[in-house]
Image (tube, rainbow, N blue to C red):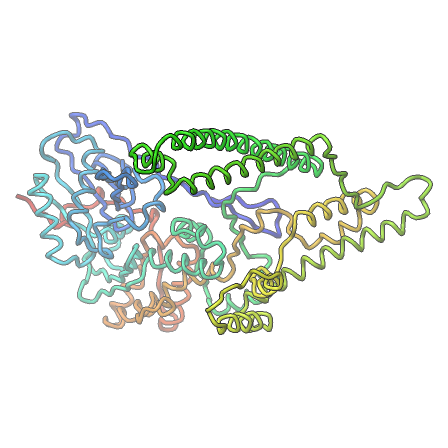
Length: 628
């Protein structure tokens, strides 16, 4: 469970962000030969083990992803298949995940073969064929075509001797109610919810009903809801974190509308709101003083001057070598006539067309060398004469002789601090106004932009005049300026002086600021705690034109006569992963009390273990056996 903060008024929970651990390859001793193999092939998780095990040996998410290595290289990238728990960070390959299921029915048998390969290899089965009877779960009222393809895969590909198919929800019912043949099963799965009447130990499939609402719908609804409510944390709110929040912080309200009304009360909100701490990386705290920052800037400037001087010297050497070469060519050309081939070869080597162009090129290069030497002499002469600028003093030292002026001086410093804060607030306000659509600042910005767009494009000289900078600042969304470095330094010096002479002023002025960076990375859960679970009872909130659990139970009961209804409601059994949400049983009991006749009796029970693994306790008569 998540860890709560120590403060009772503010409940802050941290996300675990649990990573999957690769499954080990289990030993395969001789004692397990011909032992039945149990596979709970769920659409969300798959649980596998031997018939002699009390708990599953392997539990993994029923999906895989194809990962391409060396994607950026030009050569053909090698494809790596990551199956189930081999995927350490599932969010990195979220959009590459493949599942054998379409909702709760197996339809992708290539993916199913990959998952079975993973199961048999990690169980340590090293024989050419799987010589074990297989007990496999399937969806309620599974299509015969899907079962036929599954049987073909198991018999033809793996050579299993026999297969038994069963429904996980019915197994859970018979395991938890061994002496109760009649009841109403409510199985809430990952993709669907089934309401199944059971009479004399057998399910009545003709009068059963399915709701296309399950745990995956709740998770996706919560995921998108939180992303829309907290758009600045869009990337931090992932599907995996939404699933963790669903299981640890959601519950089902006994009376939804009454609970929503309670949330409108401020005291109830403050007592029950939950804050989820999203992960973040704190910026490194700088321990460098203002004087050290100035020294670092001076050192960087000095290095830049040295680098420019070095480049200038290198360029001077290159120009002098080029000048020497051109002068030698000019002297050599004087010994030949323009018609001789040596003369033309010299022109080509100098990259000119005539002797006059060569003379001009030499003259320009000599002028450039003289100018470069003059700059170097000026830089060398100015370096020792350069005086280190004295740091600006925002506030003067207070000496004992000026004790009388101390109060007046502190007030002046406070006023300077207020002025800087006021300018910052004005810039922030202007940025907010510019970001909105119908404010006066935003409309003025669009008016200026439209005027610039209507100008003729013949001479586009915008930006060449100093006045154009004012236009740019007027249409800039940043509000025409930002917090300058000089202003930040001045503010630090003012606050340093005020901490020394008037610490209570800063305490009052900064009381409304966030106490820590972590508060900027928190999301609040208020009505979401009950809204998500309510989808099971009101699917129209998700966009489904179907009845919820209560309406479906009432409809299924209406298909039977009154005595049979009494037999069914005497044992309403809840099972499935999402049935672990707190408050589900009281909600079902309240709704049955409202819909059943006056003074009628009913009983609602829940599975002891929601993650079902009850196949071993059933008799062979409950299975549909298929053998070669």
